Image (cartoon, rainbow, N blue to C red):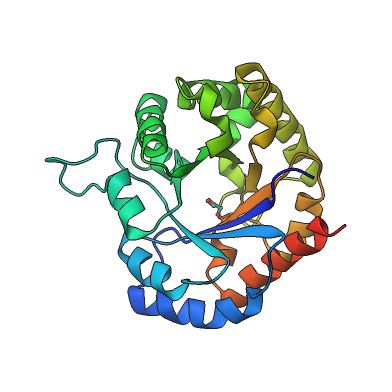
Length: 255
Ligand code: 13P
């Protein structure tokens, strides 16, 4: 077995610093000693210091949900990768579909962010995925391939510092996850694209699935050969449910 499964939580715009502390008070003991999977939580920026402090000395890593590509300067409202590193983040999620569709982020900007975050030593989780309309028009592979190639342009030699999250837009927050075999088909395709970009390092990339992952579907999804982790939204907000998903990952790693 290669890299550990990555079980990641994306809190989106949820929780105050105080609620963050309360989450980890409950969550930490539930996942203590779990070392066969990597556990990551990505809270809002404002909660990062509290999250880093609350997870000191544990097996839980902290990441951010976005960053800007410049290192510092007159960019009101933005946060740089240098700041994230200094605050104790190890990962950053980039190109999430909510950034693409609500905030209009294009592949070119996402690519600049990927380059900058890697330069500062953050691991990147690059999100890709098609809309319902694109899926129904038979464009899933075309869209995913284009997002991968544009997002990773110029960093093909750094694939060992990158993970990909396949998040079909129609499955996010809808309660309707992709069928495991449909997700598997796209994950296998993603690995074939990565293989063309860098045959030596493609297998180091973990391709995570995201979109309505819950304790009751995580096992089936994580049992697919090319699903190397999950990026969990809603179900990562409760210590109990996220710990359950972590434990499913741990159980499957031990097989
Ligand atoms: P949900 O798990 O709430 O569908 O969100 C998925 C997601 O967007 C994770 O980044």
